[in-house]
Each structure stands twice: as C-alpha cells, then as structure tokens.
Length: 463
Ligand SMILES: Cc1cc2nc3c(=O)[nH]c(=O)nc-3n(C[C@H](O)[C@H](O)[C@H](O)COP(=O)(O)OP(=O)(O)OC[C@H]3O[C@@H](n4cnc5c(N)ncnc54)[C@H](O)[C@@H]3O)c2cc1C
Image 1 (cartoon, rainbow, N blue to C red):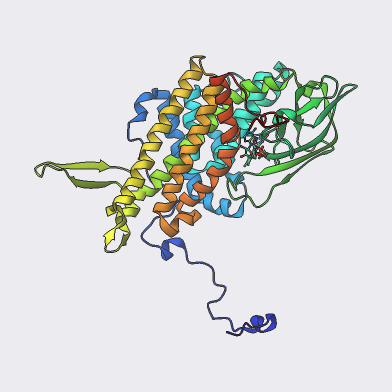
Image 2 (cartoon, rainbow, N blue to C red):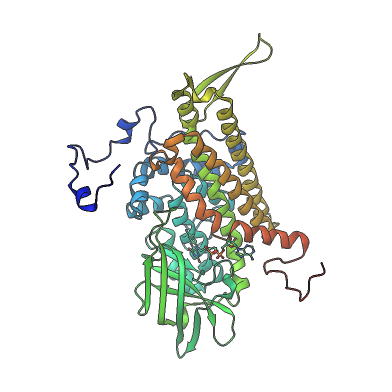
C-alpha cells in the first residue's frame, strides 16, 4: 500500500460525521447504567454494620447519601478534565467530617472509627474527594491540632473544620520521597521570624490552599520544624502537576519557596524533630487505609448494580437455595450482558472473580475496623498501622483489577467508575508511605532490624 505523504493526508476527504461529539454513553451502551447514577451499597456481605455504633452508622448513611446524590453525577466530568470540583466543597463542609477526631475549635470530635467510615464512604463514590478531605483534615488540621499553639488552633481550626478555608500539608520534596526525613528545605531564624527556602512536590490542594503546613530543616539545630504559611505569602508559589493518571481531580502541586518570611507566631511549637510527625501519621495512615476499602466497595457495588435473586441448584435436588445477592452493578452487568449465548455471570471464571472481590472487601473491612479499635484502645503501634495500609492497598489493587477485567472494554471507561477507581488506587498504593516502605516499618517492628538502607557493601565476597 502506498502511504500518502503528509500533504495528501491533509487532503483526505473527511466524512460528514467526522469530528462529531461522542455518543452519550447511555446511547452507546444502553445495557449499563453509568456511574453518575450510583448503585446501592451491597458489599456488606458479613454485616459489618453490626460492628458500628448507631452514631457511626448515622455518619455512614449521611456521607453516603451526599456522595451518591451530589458528587456521583458530576465526578467523571471533573476527573476527565483533571479539575477540582469547587462546587462540592460547601456540601462536603456541611457533612461536618473535616477535622474528624479533633475535639474543640468547632471540630466534630468523631471516633476514629466514624472518621474512617466517613473516609471510606467518600472514597466509595470518589477517591479524589476523599484525598482532598484527608490531606486537609487528617494531615494539615491534625498537625495544627496536635502540634500547634493555642492561638494557632483558635485562629485556623474553626474555619478549616467548616471547609470555609482549605489546607495542605507539605513534607515531600523532589529529591526526598520515601526518604522524607532527609528533606532539604531550610528554615533560618531571623529577627521576628524565619526565612524558608526550598521546594516541595506532590502537595495535594496546594494550588488553592488558604493554609499551607510546611516542614523545613532548622539551619541551627539541623532538626525538622513545622510552619504555617498563608496563601499569597511573598516568595511562595504553587503550580499544578499535570498529566496524572489517577486522583485526577486532586490538585497536586510543586511548591517553590524563595526567601519566604514566616513570623514567629506561625511556627508550630510541637514540631521539633521528624519524630513529631509520627503522631499525625499514626492517624492519617489509618485513614488512608480506609480509602482503598471505600474504593473497592464502590467497584464491587458498581459491578453488581441490581438486586437479583440467583437460584442455585444444590447437590441435593430437593433443596434449591435462593441467595439474595444484593450486590449491585457487576452482577447486574454480568447477568445482563450475554456472550456465547449466555450471561457473563454464568461463566464460572467470572463468578470466581466476583467472589474473590467480595471476600477481599470483607477481609479489608475487618482489618480496617480492628486497626481503629487498636487505635481507640491506645494499643496501635506504627507496625500495626503500616501493615493495615500496605496489606489493604495491595488487596484493593487486586480487587479493582478484577472488577476492571469483569467489565471488559467498559472496564477502561471512566463512565463506569471501575476504570477511574483502578487508576485512583495507584497513587494511594504509593502515598503516605509506599507499600514497600510500610512493609519495612512492620518488618522492623517484628524483627527489631531496620532494612530501609541497603546492606553495607562488603569489600570481598565470601563466595
Ligand atoms: C497523588 C499523590 C499525592 C501526594 N500527596 C502528598 C501530600 O499531600 N503531601 C506530601 O508531603 N506528599 C504527598 N505525596 C508524596 C508521597 O508521599 C510520595 O510519593 C511517597 O512518599 C513516595 O515517594 P516517591 O514518589 O518519591 O517515591 P520514591 O521514594 O522515589 O520510591 C520509588 C520506589 O522505590 C521504592 N523504595 C524507596 N525506598 C526504598 C527502600 N528503602 N526499600 C525498598 N524500596 C524502596 C518505593 O517503594 C517505590 O516503589 C503524594 C504523592 C502522590 C503520588
């Protein structure tokens, strides 16, 4: 075949329908309802709800209702455009979950379990919204609550708890991700305050945050200190990181600080070394562990979609077990869509995938719940939190990829949630300590041996 040169390629006659907008997904694929109409929650197979207090159940229902009604219809549009849905901030604020477990200063004083359930219910419908709240609440607000002065708490927490202002939390730097404790941004003492110089990367909400919690190295003590910066401080700049494949609605930024003056009253008195961030990370890691739980609940619900009665012939012919599988779209999807003359749900391989997903969700919920209880009883160790985060995110990765497979081609379309959730899980697997780093934290706790640094090279091999 003769390949036309570029001029003739331009001359190729365009069809009359060339360049038309895509068909609406409801027309293109009428069998399946897109994720804008969110299906009922049906992943609670082992009746996890029974483990929750009435207050925790109420938080769960309140958050679920808002997310399904107000966020589900618009999320794909924003995700595709990689824009933040500012219109949902007042709705999320009205839920009164920002500030989670913080007591006083207008914060909701939720139990860790209620906070975790709220995180999961937001993530079930949209992981970007849950990351937005998590960075704002469980990282930035909690750092101010645990490490701030009384004046700082009174000044910042009330409006942050209502989401009238938004915060971000900046630890990671271009050269220091997993090795964040080695960060290089400097804080130099001057009369009346501090001068900050350096760079941060990946900082969620930073492009529009009113309040920025920044970690920097004190040039006199060589220790890590924490500072509160306000939007538009001279010398401060935050620009959006483009082209993310996951959590596309979250505005992650590169922060540049050149000769930024921070007054003494905006230094966090409770951050005097990197260790001081641990009490914040203890809570935030539990919350991050609940994001994959929520995401997989949503993927399962989406795959299931409709309440169906499935009649299964037991080996004894007189006994027909009717199992009420109220698992939403995947089963609905799998029962409606036929290939080779049979519904997809009739193939054993597909049933096995669905059951693996369901089993994973039950196990993740129970591990996440136990983590909350260990925290609430004062028994949770860093190893517990890290195992929860790493194990749950790994199981979730397996679960969303099964969901993606089950939807075939539609499993790569953001319209059906599953592809979006699949992509959103990737950064969660990596942030707040990667899978590997969290594994090493637990490994250190159970063996007493730290393995974060490569084994020292010996001069000569013994072999
Ligand atoms: C979407 C998103 C949002 C984020 N939001 C924030 C935020 O709001 N604030 C903030 O401060 N940071 C944020 N981060 C940064 C995040 O915490 C880091 O990406 C994370 O800590 C990993 O660092 P890194 O990306 O530099 O990977 P690297 O540290 O370069 O790691 C690369 C790979 O090497 C592995 N590795 C590294 N060290 C070891 C080791 N010792 N042993 C074995 N394996 C190792 C890692 O597990 C990983 O697989 C965000 C990141 C993302 C992607």
